[in-house]
Length: 88
Image 1 (tube, rainbow, N blue to C red):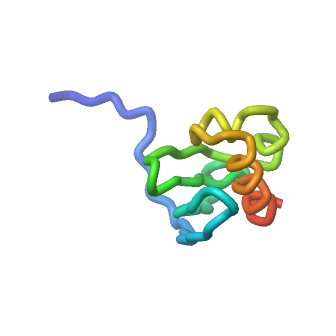
Image 2 (cartoon, rainbow, N blue to C red):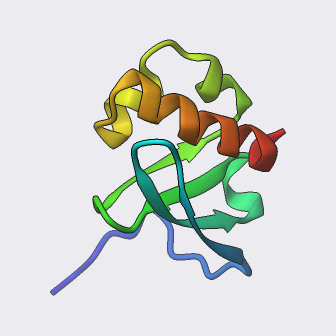
């Protein structure tokens, strides 16, 4: 079978595994940093199997974190508070 690759790169990454409990929700995250995402980080929610490439601009986008991770506003605010520390 012939494949047409758009890209096939191997890059070094720094991965941080974090688990914390907010007021109403437990978060188990894998945070992947690489130069691949132009300063953004790949945040994987290991419990819900949801992920997003997130930068500070995404944290400012109303409803974005709620949508991506299927969280209510309070849960999303807990996650955003943590992510602000990671992405600056």
